[in-house]
Amino acid sequence: MNNLKVLVADDESKIRQAIGVYLKKEGYEVGEAEDGEEVLAKFKAESWDIIILDVMMPKMDGIKVCQEIRKTSHIPIIMLTAKNEEVDRILGLEFGADDYMGKPFSPRELVARIKAIFRRMEKGSRKEEHILKFPGMLIDLLTRDVFVMNQQVNLTLKEFDMLTLLARYPGRVFSREQLLKEVWGFDYYGDLRTVDTHVNRLRDKLRVNDAPSYISTVWGVGYKFEVSQHK
Image (cartoon, rainbow, N blue to C red; front, side, top):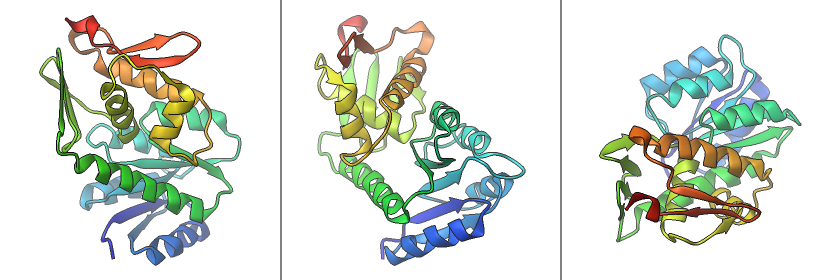
């Protein structure tokens, strides 16, 4: 038993139950919520390791719930969206979701993505050299804290993973395909615009006290971490 807790939020009980069956087989503790207000109540009342959040829920939709949670926490959030609802996916990512899956989906694939998220978090916490320092920036890989100009910056799971990947290799250019593979996982079949959305959000958050972004665009190729901007 791994004792990791997953909150599954969907207004359809059959979906919650199906997800719960697979998660419990893997040893996860599972909680359920059927509307947005219940999600926030349970999130505040208990400690969770990841949230599976449906976009279309009564009382408060998943995007608003995600936005509220992101005000105080960077807990991993996977959004469930209706098939081909690109607007929902983009909005969810812009408001802080780490991943999304379109309905109908395979519960096994969902479990695989949850495992991948936990593996990456565990891998990061085991690094002996857990501090990355740059002019104006400090990244703590153990606590997953980021400070820019001595001010803490709250990042989502994917934003943090993307920043640390780029920061470990200053000046190296990563293509969108490479970032999608490294940050979201080898078997992730996502839109390359997912990368652009996260980079734009990350840049905005790193602009503390009008500081320029540490992430540069290499047109036609991808992105790189640029330290020289802060000498």
